[in-house]
Amino acid sequence: MTFTLSPGALAPGARIGILGGGQLGRMLALAAAGLGLRTHVFAPEADSPAFDVCAERTNAAYEDEDALAAFGASVDVVTYEFENVPARTAALLSDLCLVRPSPAALAACQDRLVEKEFLAGLGIPVAAYMRVDDAGAMARAVAQLGRPSILKTRRFGYDGKGQALVREGGDLAVIFRSLGGAPAILESVVPFSTEISVVAARGAPGAFVAYDVCENWHENHILKFTRAPARVAPETAAEAIELARAIADALDYVGVLTVEMFVVDPPRGSAGPQTLRVNEIAPRVHNSGHWTLGGAQTSQFEQHVRAIVGWPLGGALRQGAEVEMENLIGEEVFGFEQYLREPGSSLQLYGKAEARPGRKMGHVTRVAPAKPA
Ligand code: AMP
Image (cartoon, rainbow, N blue to C red; front, side, top):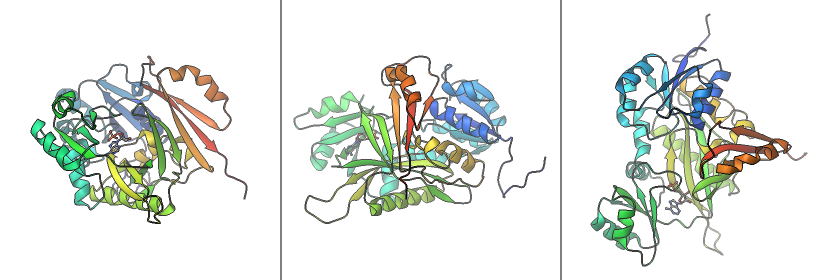
């Protein structure tokens, strides 16, 4: 078959390797299949949800170089569904095939200190932060940034793990040890009114498409609800998208990325604008973008796939007046039938065998119809 392709684009039937086999990998694989692309999922966990829906699977450790070599040789492009892939794994694969987003973009988002320095270097506002490598540095950082402040491990933090609040009276050495003494950063607490994120895609030739800025609520440090559009000033939403664009351009990014930000309201009685602080960058599709599956013209999963194979990006317009995504966590999934009965909602279940506390089992998307003109 002879397809008409833009320069650098892969043809339908191309093979996509996905590092990581969780629900994000599963929804990426499903979107790829919808575009006539084949996926090969590489994941260390034997019961990975993405294994159920891909053409090929490799169940091996990220350090298994023989398995990585075979995986890299079997695909045209490799991507990932989470950012804690070892740097050596990404580097090894990039000798064998395209890796998108690039290992350099991945590295910029794996370490909170590197990430903060990258953002600050671009002039992007972030919370005040200091590097903390030992108990002495911790004491100096708290003296400088004050309390309350938040200690975060530089690597492997997610869903509030690897974080400790430094309260008035808290013993600093004990707090530092509570995170295992790992290299960390201390951040001042941002007095935010709203947590938002920008989910956006950058295509191979630099095309950029952002979804509506959305608003996030967490319960027990785990995302519970996302709402699009975020209820922030239009100028704030526009500024958030410009920050995401500047980050994507600086990383020469290819794929979907998510930028989480805090919105700080002006002091009561002041007419000043809301301001933003970027909290973190996820170099991948993200839980706060799940609403786009059924709630936007093109889902974030399809958008990511289009970007990494070099195809035109899809429309990102929201469907309906507003869209809400609710995560089903742990045993909440047992009531799944009630969500199927809700008019205007759609349900995704991730096929996980066990509903452990805190585990993301599925999500519901509710599209509120547009109001009649
Ligand atoms: P993170 O792991 O950095 O995404 O942080 C998890 C959650 O902790 C965020 O969603 C916020 O609710 C809260 N948080 C993190 N950093 C800060 C900060 N500097 N100021 C206020 N809240 C924060």
